[in-house]
Image (cartoon, rainbow, N blue to C red; front, side, top):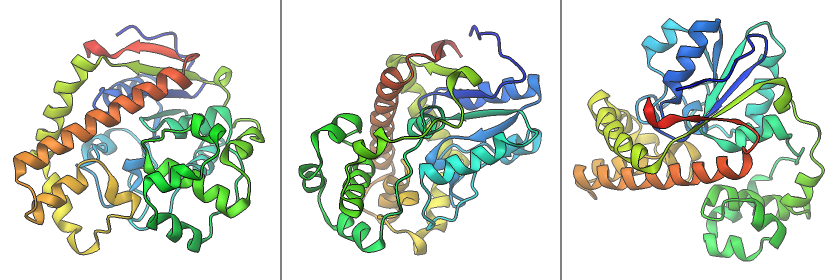
Length: 288
């Protein structure tokens, strides 16, 4: 893989779809340049999952410093705004950072800015939880609908909640977005290009490896605290393995459903990167 020149004095951003090998590349860059690895993956923030979300191993964390991994309680509310505030604090410190992950929204808030939307009242969130995706979509304005992933219920519900709570559309709030914390010219932004035919076998192999490393045991340990409405419990692989532990699915069925969910997620990630990261440095991730 050919990397562009990486200025040691600028933060590095490294985005890529799930199973693309970005964590290994981040480790390589961090080791060469004495950097701290910062998480930009929404599923890897939770303290209840390590294996099932492919968080760095304990050995990786002992080898190099990592930040914002597994630091949020499973039932705690955490948004892109929370993440941005934490990263802003890290950027203000002395450490040289490489920020790596697959959550495009995190990267866009960092490099494009984040609208300062008031928190959503709990009662409105509960109302949204009770509605179907189709009902939520029916109430969105057309401009907001063009800007979000309409298949992602969490994104759609968030847009609906903003409209209900503030009387202003998410698009309207976004148009008032302040200057970004880290504009592209102030960092080295890298995104991994991972062809579908290369990525899909890796997705299956990785899930099998997760099972060998204890993903099922992680889900079993959360059995009494599992809540399908919590973002932490929607991490890919968790509902599928919960289906197996409940007896609703065979292990092969859980494996297949998790692989399908992961492939669909990777497709959404690639689409986001293509549409929102055109000015980034693209890396050929098909030959790791």
